[in-house]
Image (cartoon, rainbow, N blue to C red; front, side, top):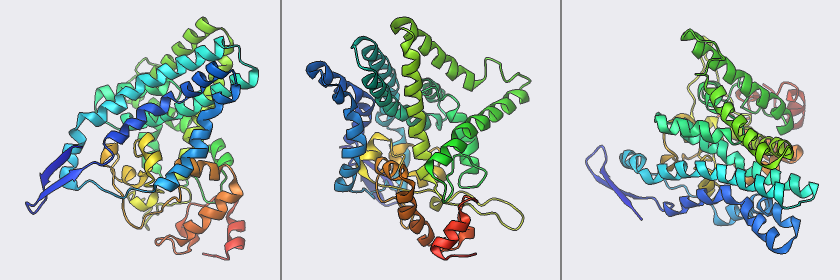
Length: 393
């Protein structure tokens, strides 16, 4: 364990030890999960082993999050600078990038050469895509940093699931409009994840393209210029596809289609639960209030936070977007999810259960107090919400 020592504003010495320091290595294992199923299939011939990572994530993961519990420990502000400068944490995010390329290449090779049945082929592509959802999360962490190296790594890793527009849309769009009806990446109360996906996935690309087009036009360049950061990442995605098809045949096009779709779905699942129903309000002049910790749903569940680089401490991330994952903090009295992200994804996939659990939590939030005007509500669902809860503005 490493201890960081600094003086607070009163000159008092403050010591802090990150008790999860070595546990963050779990983030390096997450992208490699498909190889567990591949090894077991190669040894036994049972194709069901290829689906083992789904059980690990969506069966064992939520239960482990519940059993292991939460960590509300925060680094003192006085040591945050030292913690952010510790390159150990940066190396973890950097090392994950090539691992995603290894997993894509390895799973594609096995799918093409192992004489799998069509269902097993589809299952392996889906599993590979599921873990590639973390590639977008890694791109998220790296893309928020001012380092040229990290921004470049972000573009590279986002090329794995062909989601090269993410950093632009997320940084310039989502962080500006979060928790408003205008944000395609903020889910509305009463909106199912399936309806949300139809709005969020195309809306994110359109908004990213508009931001990049405007940036290039200010520099007198066409949106199709080689400086277009979206095209740069998608160009790498296309190169990856060409290499895989050349190496393993046209069946790789089906593999990549399934792989990318599942990775997109992982991101959509995260976006859906992170701001569900929460609303930033406007004052009398129409000015939008500053994003506050209570505009994001938070979770301190240890296991899922370790593999997601503290993504679940989403409240502090939106309040301080440049803060590195190891320094993100817990706040009391926040909108709080009852489980880690993987458990909440399962709940979201069954909309009646999601609404039953989450809508009551929304209405009970201290800053809401049952007032629907303080929530971001799907207009189509509003009459039913008023009828069900007997709450009117």
